[in-house]
Image (cartoon, rainbow, N blue to C red; front, side, top):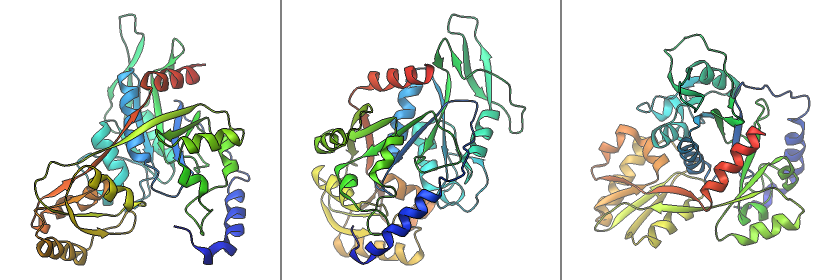
Length: 347
């Protein structure tokens, strides 16, 4: 959403964004760091993208963990995400990543400290076969971190995925992947729009990721002289199997995409409720949803995976089933993504 009244504030925001880079010396971890980020302040689909990339790298034999700020959590210190924990403790996105990607996830306002915790918690084992060194498991908390190579035979055996890291200055990364859309490219800078940086910031990116079907974005990027590799991917909604009318609700940056996806999937949406991004549900919110479902004769409530994570056990208070419409990312050229990334890191 563009906010005309905020246009006079854009130059101040731009100056502050530039000053954040001045004098910063990023710290480097032992393992390669691959950042997944965006220009937009939300709604780019980074979480399902990270989940898909982590799964793909696992298939290629790489030990992967995810480092995240843990937006909205009650603490700022470094911690390993417990998949059966709560969004208050770890943040909704890291908790969802830990559950769906089934990789270790670590949170902390200082991502470097989270990375140190990740590296200290993994044990190196040397196999007797031709594969060479591999990462095989987790050490107990507090165990001494071994010294080991991040590469073997020119290929990474372990790496960090940095969630929403394009604007994070303190942690050095080896590859910056930036998700983009035509909407991002046409948007205004904060606070008048939803974009966190000027388009010139894309020169820092190593890889650009654009959804299949958004050829206009690729054309515009190439027209500005950007020559980085472009990963194409599809977003696929995994709609729940439900027979009867539902009330849909969400607290995400771009709710329209969620409701449109449900309708395209043939879900009968008879009521909608929109909350702010990363919204924490109150008693009043739950009462309103419960009453809306009853008034509309809904057989279920449908929400996003991140909203369901934030609801936690409170979903039982709603009186009707709470179903999840998941979002899955599929790379158009999985082999090309994995091989190209590993070659870049190994080189």
